[in-house]
Image (cartoon, rainbow, N blue to C red; front, side, top):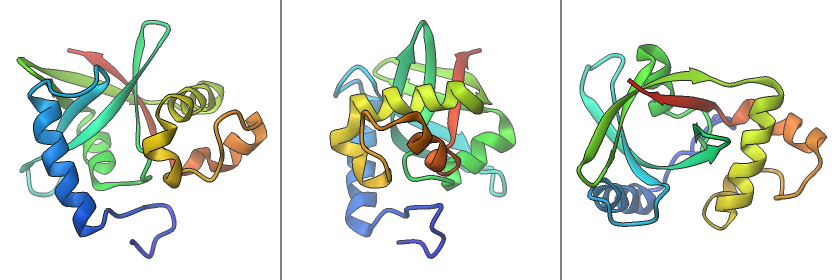
Length: 148
């Protein structure tokens, strides 16, 4: 675990699982919201990948970082773009960060849909009051993703 309370660093076992899960998600094996995200490192220029769950709301696509201010978040903030791969589909997307009431709405939907796999990263329960989400929203970046 990271010493920074805003980041939940994966354990060695979780890193191994993420590599395997990302491999399968990238090949289209998994649920329809599972993708392999790739982004260029802001310092190295090397491409890094991680599995993610996309959230679809009213025709828009969102990406939530349950672990907080991770390296992949810093990388996509730096470039403003990422690749999402699922099966044969590997496309470039632009991102913009969401704040305010829309961010709270996305976090509520995300936690409601994926709570079995991400609840441990959130200090609120699905169905909590808006004020509770407002207290933790700064810990979980939310990005809108749009295909280029």
